[in-house]
Image 1 (cartoon, helix red, strand yellow):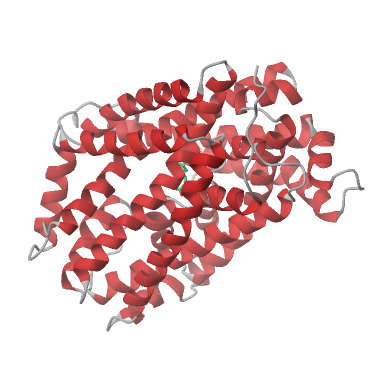
Image 2: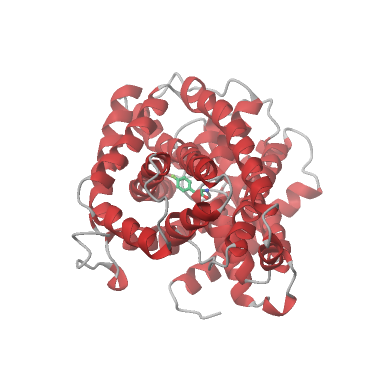
Length: 447
Ligand code: PFF
């Protein structure tokens, strides 16, 4: 068993690495659009409410389990709970493997778009031509897999470097750079003529759009955005020393994640509206709409390149965080870090290949609900595995190991009112809320 458990070099390193995990493609290509569609500032208020109650509670639960157990996600449940709970860790680690396999494919597209933007591929093209070029690129059998391989190789190289020497060091360098780029993009976007329309779409509060459906959308987005249920926070928590106040840390991490989501909205939507484009979320927004917008924008050549660098950084600091739980488990099984990282990294790379082909030559092969491999893998993790894992983590912390968890956040002192509120959320509020996300995701309940 593991005897040389690693630690973060500093609290700042832990915060930046965890914020780097939380800040990912979800913040950039999903949040701005979901917020705009669901009532702007009214949605943002609800989202904030959810992040700082349920979101923080689940985050704190995962970190508390990890720090208390001082081991990987799979062994943690056995070590501090009862052996019957080990499957929750297994579920979370399998979820991590699946998510990383397709996330790395999409991250590969981001790298390809740095290269394409720098090479001037899109200059002079209209939206239709850019859309055609995107479809042809992701549908081709070789190039996207090569970029997926490059991204996977970079992820593997960083994770081999270890917790403080690899993940922490990289995050301390990349996260400040990320913020500088994001602020530059916001400054460009909000000063374009016609930017107000985008600001209005994103920020003007429309309380009439708030419904149960909106609340569900906010819950699902908060859950994904904070990287909950993926074994990441649990593993990262195990590297936190006893002196660190984890309650304060989770507030700071959630704050940074939400700040980036809002800044991403300010960077993207004003520019999209200034050029009269449609802000629909996801790959279309990122790889078709935005390159079209950059084409017409003063300085667009430069801003296109730094935008795709921004996306790649966001994806990379998330991907290293999600490979780590897998590696932590295998090193605890006795493998060296290098062997564990390369071995799991290569498996993840191979698993990503059918995802890549599923948007091209394998597009006729369907799995779940008539979807191809990539969409099925995304559906399975997003709609089923993450909510189930998250709910079990709440139940485990709130009901099975409550005394250990309470000691973990309040030290030896009496639990204060916040700790009691935390337990109440974990025991009752969060499991019910997550159950609703699950039922609505599976379309058993319609909101
Ligand atoms: N919080 C991340 C995001 O918003 O993109 C979620 C995530 C996805 C984390 C994929 C890690 C990962 F590999």
